Length: 95
Image (cartoon, one colour):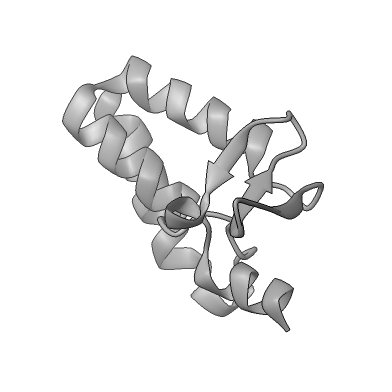
């Protein structure tokens, strides 16, 4: 089953051009994150990572500053510091 999820992700990478994929809020894309977790930690951890990313990587977010540093608040009210946020998202906010 672990290999099945890894193959699904590889097929996604091969069939959907990067330019057509939705921009991820995180520095490490959701598919890369889930692939890495699944490969290193197994299927259950990969599925948990997928569930977490699906719940948190969407357009319903806010970026605020705490101690003068940007923090992303996801739609599920999770906080992510600057090191986890995609640079293009940060650049849009800082303009």
